[in-house]
Length: 109
Image (cartoon, rainbow, N blue to C red):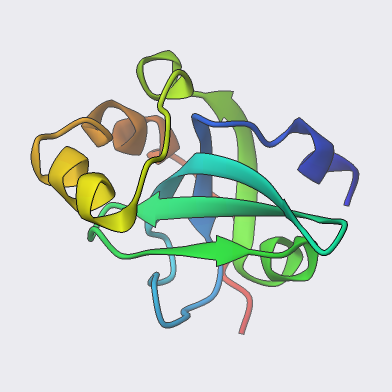
């Protein structure tokens, strides 16, 4: 869980397990860092346009944190999901997804 402290807006991840919002190997990028009931949380949007919040346990179970930060996305300010969807369709998150290509983590089953 040490890597989770390094997650910031713009951090690139790769899904290591399929979930309701991502498929194995699908790249994503953090668009929001938040705290809920005193616990950290992170919101990610994936190449498919699906998005959700992840707890520390979710990150460990479903994601590989690459350690890369996509600078064009790093300054993103989340407002609401309607705007998030508009920004996604406008290509705002596109620069992050190629950063996750290449040899990635092995899928966990």
